[in-house]
Length: 375
Image 1 (tube, rainbow, N blue to C red):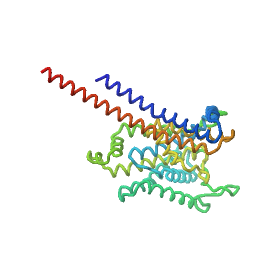
Image 2: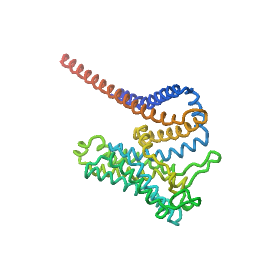
Image 3: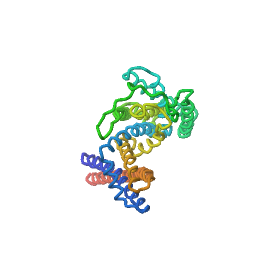
Image 4: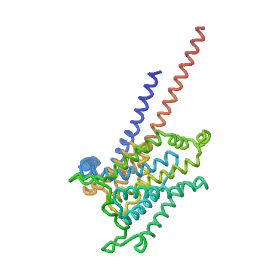
């Protein structure tokens, strides 16, 4: 029995490693073919990406980008674990960052009070915006995909309306940029100066804490068990006494609260104001990263680092004659290969499990027959 358990554990580990390895190999192969079709040498591109991406300034850039991407991936993954597709992360983090910037710019409090207050405001705004989709789903049966897409558009309109100079926005001295009131320097989040390599955003530690909280709540608490149970089978969860509607609404609210953190690394460590150049589309990037990481906090972290690496290195390929669209090609190919690779490995693992069960039943039947003959 111990040998069988040990063999099963080894097979599970091999399958867990095989999926990402297969995905990476397939993605590299497909990307190489695409580059060859454009008439360029793929090995030149890969070599440049490795050398440029390993530079110290590139590593700091990748870590800063990965901080934002990781939070977006965690926010999406919370919904995925409940079998919910929260496409509204994009609107949730932009609304959260905007109101956090408005509150922060209006305050003259010490940073030790102002920074936590802005974080709380961002999480509350993100949670409230996501709660609209959650309530619509549990009370009216509205698909969260439809409602969150519409809420993204509404968020864009609300921010554009409120950020006008006569409302909550203001023009810069040149009269070309509309933004919220800049944050006082005391309200900036701490950064780590690494010298020539650049500045590492301190919000990376908040992102790491969010990842630990995600792992602990979903994997080590009753709430996390109920959430995963509803995601796997609503009828079975309801039969065990779990309120499905309550879990759906709660998971959307928590996903929105985490989404509220997505724009804060940029706001508190970089721009220190919300303006028209504030990054958009991070919620959709989070969907790809959550898929890459299979909703696991470590996997999401690796996916966020990979996304930051690709963004940094493929932009440099333009300087050596490669098409700028290569980034989109590589990202799409990686996501597609990961989805296919994990499905192939999952089916293989299921087939192996069925074979083991069949072999075990056959062995028990043979043993029973032998005992009957002996008797």
